[in-house]
Structure formats: structure tokens, C-alpha cells
Image (cartoon, rainbow, N blue to C red; front, side):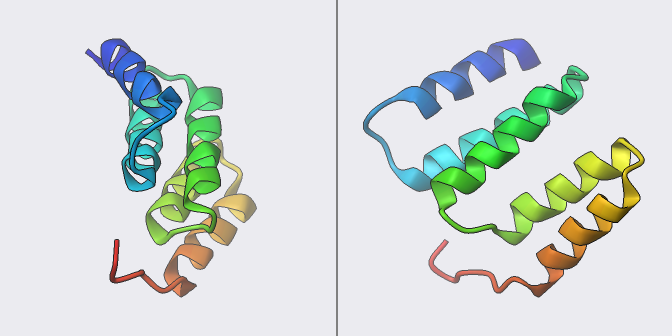
Length: 94
């Protein structure tokens, strides 16, 4: 039911109201769904949209971007994102 989930996450993301944290995780979860249906372009753009909502990169987002590039055999980019994920501090308020 990944395609239905994508529609539901997109509806949440597009709502004017709502908590930013919900939108960040909706983007991340939608990216996971896109990955499962082999839509790597939308997976990538959904991860970038999560950064736009979060305002700064987060380890969870960076590690998923690393995996995205790893799957594309773009190892230099994958290493960059994985290394960034290990250097960012986790916000305890999240």
C-alpha cells in the first residue's frame, strides 16, 4: 500500500496548518515509500523537502540521503552524507 501511503503523506505535507515535525517525518516516510516503489527521483526530492521543513540537516535525513546515493553507486556522495550524519548533534527536543 505504498502508493496510498504516498498520497496520504503528501496530503499531510501540503496542509497549511500542522506541526513542522509531522511534516519533516511525513517527508522522510514518504521518501521510504518512494524507495519501495523504485521511484528514486521522488525519494530524493522528498528527503530534500524534509530538510526544507527542518531548516537544517538532521542525522536521520543525512543517513537516508547517504543510502540513496549508495544505491545509485555514487559512493563519494554517499560518504559525504553518511559522514555528515555522524557529525551532527541530535536535538534532544525532537
